Amino acid sequence: METFGIGKAIKNMRNGAKVSRRGWNGPNQYLGLQRPDVNSKMSLPYIYIRTVHGDLIPWLASQTDLLAEDWVLVE
Image (tube, rainbow, N blue to C red; front, side, top):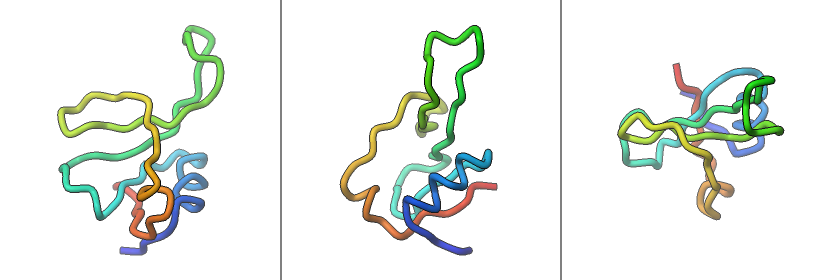
């Protein structure tokens, strides 16, 4: 499976893909890009994370995440 940096991860999310890091130790965690619709309280796109418990929440990158080269596409 191809790995890549955060730049390619963001490009993939802009194209509708979900991404994850091999270095994350929680199962089934991934990031996606949410584009608000007319009914949303948010007004701009944002990146969310699916947590190990299945919750979807806004994501804030760490320094480690930004510099990592182990990002992968999620099927």
